[in-house]
Length: 330
Image (cartoon, rainbow, N blue to C red):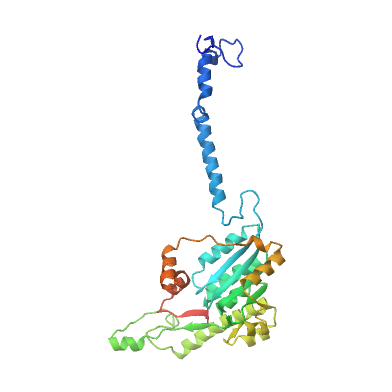
């Protein structure tokens, strides 16, 4: 007798089956087993469960916004920001693609504060946003500057808001060709370039443009200019002739742009958000879904201490001073 229990071998639920292996375990041993914690009795089950729970917790707390949930996300309006020079747009395009794959995003607020940038880069962002606009309402809010390429990306929006003093317009394309021949002559440096085709070295920074090269580049600029006019006409629903009349390179204030049909309403981001909330049915109070922030702690430190926004200026690093560059830029 031990602890008031008989030492007779038993197996719970096994009856008198003396041949069952469990029948050889005494009642005291069974009592000891059942007293042990679950994690010791079933270690594999315990740790697999812990890992599964950890995965669920990580998924929950790594959501883009507090409103996201694993089981049934709440409908949201997403914010897309185009800021600074439009040159390297890989992050912007990645965020737009991510929005496309979120079925619970019901609208997009495009915030533009940019003087424009590269011709191809501006068109890439416009095309991506125009694709989004086929699936959901898109509203653009112009900040201090939304000119040239900044205006182009705004053309993808169904509704465009600008402040009265916003600088916009500047419909046109420009080409910068560095001229360093005078400097090279002064310091005694020269360069020879061998080519296999007559226009392969057109726009070289070591010599002035030849007349035939100037005509060649003017033809390229004319085609890019025509593409810009087409985008404005389509985005604003105006006759091409009217859009062409606005494509003189001039800038306009937001108030002037409204009178010209480039802008729908005077207002800021809040007004654009309210319009989207009504259009999409997503409550304004739910806020905006923003792109997850990257850890630019060095850039943020410089911006705080010196007022230098490295992230906004990173596109400038893509300029090659030796080569011509085509720009939709104010």
